[in-house]
Image (cartoon, rainbow, N blue to C red):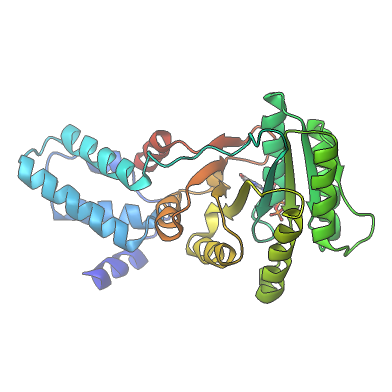
Length: 301
Ligand code: GDP
């Protein structure tokens, strides 16, 4: 059965899948329609197991109810998808550390949109009247600190960075958090490096950044940024990072450029970590809290 599905997938050249709602508009929901629903969910990166389970359950419910009313089947599909995405997960950010700044580390592989996310999130926090300090602990990539400082200036928050290229990222993180404590800000966000090529070094470095910050303060959030367009690869990255640091939430970026948002389900299942925020573009306002309902709507369209 799986092999047949895969074969169908390979043959299919409709990368963006078909509209699930359109599929369920036909009068009779026959074998082909079920296959196509499966295909579409797989192409959205929902993952093989959740897809098979979902379609199985849906078929069962349709059989039990004996309803072939497409309207009813659509609402069952919406229900099943929503349950998979798990709307009951707590997706709030820990931003109130009462008496000290909330400290956030932002981690992820180069190019996934870490720095952009820090900038966008700083803007959201500033709009909520919070004082924010950024820490440029990606000292490996020369342009990274510059890029973060530019974002900081853009949204009106200071950035702590080192003037020395290749400086110790942990010491920059330490400086940022101590500046945050000194100035009694609400949130310190630390941008980190993401050279996954050298897994052992990366692990050492991130672990050290966290330990050094912890000399001053708890780390309240570790946000792992993943690029939604990278599908399964993103999931592998997520596993590596969660081995090094306790990831508390995922930011899924570049959802504007893909129909593969189903990866949310796979991430939450395999890591037990909720997707908290989504990136929907390159601009300063293109960050949103993850919302299960609108997410499912998007999957269905
Ligand atoms: P970093 O290396 O992880 O810090 O990644 P950057 O923040 O430098 O982002 C890499 C590229 O992705 C930049 O060109 C960003 O503008 C772009 N980018 C970041 N987030 C998004 C997003 O949500 N949607 C789109 N379309 N592009 C994004």
